[in-house]
Length: 452
Image (cartoon, rainbow, N blue to C red):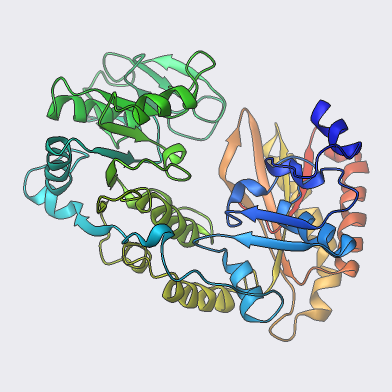
C-alpha cells in the first residue's frame, strides 16, 4: 500500500511488479512491458477473473502508451494477432550474447524399460550427470510433480487410496511417510498393507522426492537440492535454496516449474527433463502449447555462460511432434501446426470461450442448475449457428476434477465471438441463476478464455 501511494503521488516513474501491477495508478502511462507474456499466471483465478495482458492493452489504448510483450514462446493468440497485423512483430534471431543453443537428446523410456532400467533416471541422463560431476559443473533436473510417487496401488486387488473429500488419488510423500491430497490438503499415514485385502502396496509414478532419492543413491555423498512447494517454506525460501546452488554447494538441483524459468547460472551445463509427457496428455486444449513452452524454457537454462549446454528429454512418446519441435527449438513449425488445430476445433484465437462453472455439495443440484443455464442459452445460440463463427454450447459436463473439498463441479461451455450482445445475455442468465432459490448453496462463476 505504501508503494501504491508513492506511485499515486507521482514519486515513482518506473513500476516493477507481478500481475496486479498492471493496475498501478500512473497518471502519464507511456510504456507497459509484459515479460513472458504466454504465462498462464497472468490470468487471475479469482474474481475479477482478469488477464493482465488484456488490462494492459486497454490501459495502453486509453493512455496512448506502447505495449511491449516479450516471450521466447509467444502464446498462439498473441502470435496470431501479430501475423494478422493487429500488433507488430519483432524477432530476435540469436540467443543472448550469441551463445549456442543447448544440444538436445530425446530418450525413449520404453527402451529403458526393455533394457531392465525401471528408474526415473535413464542411462543416458545418468551418464550425462556423471560427466557433469567430473567436470565440476552443475545440472538442473525438472519434473512437474512433487511427492515421491503419483499414487499407491494394491498389487492384489488393485485398490488405490483416494481422498475422501476430492475425486483424486492420494500422492505418496516419502519425506513424512504419508499419503496426501494436493487439492484440499488431506493426509493420512501410509498403511502397512492394503486396507481392503491386506495385499502388498505398489508405488506407481514418480515425483521430485523420488528423483532426489535416486540421485542420492546413484551418486553417494553428492549433495542434491530440491525446490518445490514441500521444501520452500517461510524458514527456507526459494531464494535461500537458489543461493546455495549459485555458490556451488550442490551440483544437482531438482525441482518443479520453479526451476524451469528465469534461472541464469553460468555453471549449469546440463538440464534433464525427467518426464516430458507430464503436461502433454491433460484435459486442456492448451496442453501442447504449455508443454512446448515449458520444455523450451527449461532447456534454455543450460549453457547460459561460456560453456556449451546440453539437455536430455525423457519421454514415453518420442515420436510426439510437440516434444520433437521443442527439442529442436522450432517455434515457427509448432505455431503453424497448433494454429491449424485451433482453427479446426474452433478454439481461441478463432472463437472465444465462455465457461460457466457451478459447484455445490449436492451433485444432482449442481447438474440441474447447469442444465437450466444451457437451456437458457439455446434461444440465443440456435438462430446464429450457421457459418464458421456460429456459436456452440457444450455441456453440462464434469470438471476434470469433479469433486474438490466435498463440492461437486460442473461446467457449461459456450464458443462464440466475444461481444457486447453475448455479454449482456450471459449477465442476465447468471443473475437469474443466482436469484433462483433452487440454487441456494451453489457457487456460480464465469470465465472468458480460461487458462485451466
